[in-house]
Length: 185
Image 1 (tube, rainbow, N blue to C red):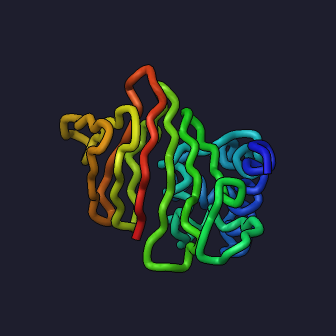
Image 2: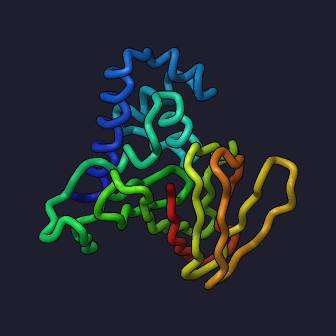
């Protein structure tokens, strides 16, 4: 799939889940603190949500964020993924997540995040029900844990672990690409 097909696939997953849960656009917008217009554009593939937006949508609809990686691609072995077989989500603000786990129904999932220079998870904190951690492969990742804490900048080979429901934001404040492996429970 190309980038536009991936964006349209995400839009369909969000819209279908919302409709399946019998939630109106207005109700979902109210639950996540965004406008109906914004959600409508996301569901039509015209706008990309931030990481915080997609996490909030999942939480509001009772689905883990990994649900949005569920469009399957053909694989030669069910326990292995190769680069051309992976599901990708393109977020607003310069973040691309690639699901590298072959099975999302296991106890953990693995993502590789690519953060363009200046990319961020959004202005609002992420509040995910999953415990998660990461390992910086290249570049710099700045993390704000809780709203009033000082940022911590991590570099290559640095790692972190966050408890479930930790409120945090993250960004690449450098002028180079940042790559991070994330693990979610």
